[in-house]
Length: 361
Image 1 (spheres, rainbow, N blue to C red):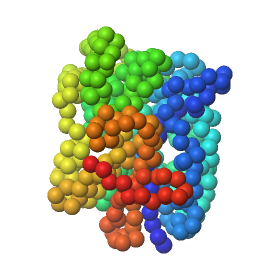
Image 2 (image 1 turned 30 degrees about the horizontal axis):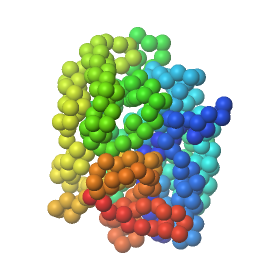
Image 3 (image 1 turned 135 degrees about the horizontal axis):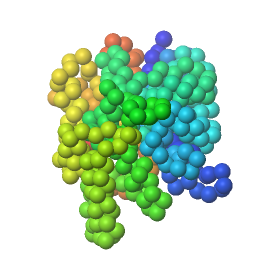
Image 4 (image 1 turned 180 degrees about the horizontal axis):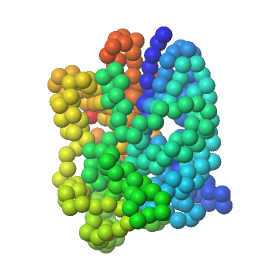
């Protein structure tokens, strides 16, 4: 039987592009429900109908940290709060979940969900159960990593101190009536600092690379940018050097985060190279998180693929300059060598261009 895996990440699904009152939801990033439906229809019909196809949702599929709870954006996330937010996403993207249901009921199809920093709330058991009920099929949930046939699948937030979830302390319980999710500092920053700004400037978190965006903004919007930078640093020191029942902090992590904010950090690509050098069991690493589709082959022939994002990105890099959406994904093919499958980086362009190899540096 033919065997394949299709890997997508960083959909950032929210409550839908139109809110119940008819207004536009400026926090909604995912507008590709129809494209995703056609994508899954292709990989569950024709030559793929009876094939074994695994859909791997590689983190940040849901943008739960940017979904409000009864009008309030809170970093204090109990299981019931997360559950209500998840149901809001399901209601706002019925076509997306219908596509998953249709795919899952096709012969030999399965779904795996790996957590990212924007959908870490899917770690709650009730959220997993509701998701499975919605797609009407079992879903394999993985907290951080999924390794199969020499390929490591991982979202990528664990290589950044600012977004890293603590595997040893996923929940905070001390002094609280019920457990809450132990969010990384970056999630607190998004909820408390970025979301209010997005209501004024919705594209602020869609520009890459961030360093170039800040430099450009200093030239074109000097006073606003300076004020935001000052407010951001005040927020950092106020939250990293104070105690709260609702977050954890330590000095080592604080300095790591500060180095990353100041630009002194190792890229995820470099982290992947070190990972491959220290673990000979992996021949391929597939990640998301950066919103930048990437393919890299190292000197020993091992490979790294980044699945990019299905949301709009404004790129300030010369190689990808411009604004747009590219439906990139990883396609893992077992047909040539079942013991060592090969991964391709592809771009979905609709029914007439389903399979386009998409390698970029």
